[in-house]
Image 1 (tube, rainbow, N blue to C red):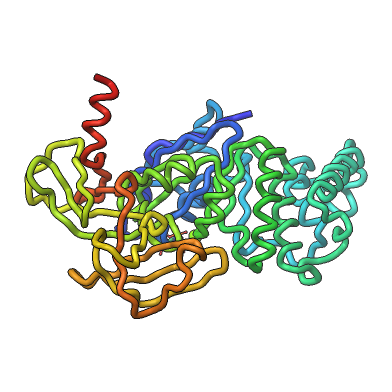
Image 2 (cartoon, protein in one colour):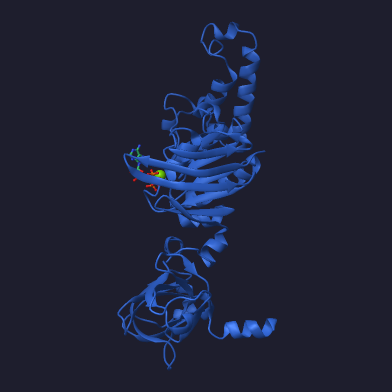
Length: 388
Ligand SMILES: Nc1ncnc2c1ncn2[C@@H]1O[C@H](COP(=O)(O)OP(=O)(O)OP(=O)(O)O)[C@@H](O)[C@H]1O
Ligand SMILES: [Mg+2]
């Protein structure tokens, strides 16, 4: 059992800073999903961990051991790539056996004619066969063992690649978008299989994906990387309900969060529509802020005096939910609302509506993107009374 720690990993390519000091700790049995926009440095970070790329600075510690000086082959870190990278001329069984052959047989033991004459070779090969068979059974691919990659489906190749990575019982498991070549149904199925596999292996795992549903549903914790920096590392629920940065709030959530440019008023009050929020820290009146609310916390009044007047631009029916695109009369900005089909029944493009926001679900972000803690006005007084 081991843990994985990264300390201040830096990397530049021809003067461009790609990784700006990445630090994170993964527990013994922890599954961390690493997400972020394309080009933010996810694959670069995994390649550095695996030893396929060198860092400009920082430490990689597995258990007690600093891996920075250790070459890729000796790191005992397994990596699965999006492309699977199977050897096309080898069968599935031979592909899975590769890491064991490289580790457990000497150079002479591997030679075709002389190898079998070397002491211990038969025993070592029998052990490799046994380990490969066990792996194949646990991944339910034992019937495919004699096929070459060209004779397998994408999902089957992906399992062989997983088997090859897991068979040598690595200390750390890295996966770089391993499901992105599969169709939607197979992906959902494979998610569960990878989580199971991870549980059985019991090693720290970093799983790169650009699919936020994958990240939120599979991971113990989600690491959100934006522009080469880790913006937040937290449980899926905290990442979603309590984003630490505006970029995290924008990246996670489907449909995307609604954001409005605003300013701090007197007494550290930020207002939107009928809602007033008091910031926990004092800020100069006039300081620019961004207010955010997720679509499911926007409610639609079809009549009455409350809420911001808007017009319905577009209605999307998605079966279990309805997405509304509304344009605010006052500032012309689009607000997205997510309703249940019963809440949304009868709504049609062109209708005038009024929009209300759940006061305790509004986020405020500073100009630099950092989240500013705030409470709905009224709630702070209630809290004082409750504690008073
Ligand atoms: N060997 C290299 N030489 C120069 N630039 C590179 C090299 N490898 C990566 N980069 C650059 O580093 C940045 C990060 O690349 P990386 O592949 O890590 O992104 P990513 O987050 O994995 O993106 P994606 O989600 O598209 O896979 C990109 O701008 C890329 O062009
Ligand atoms: Mg990548």
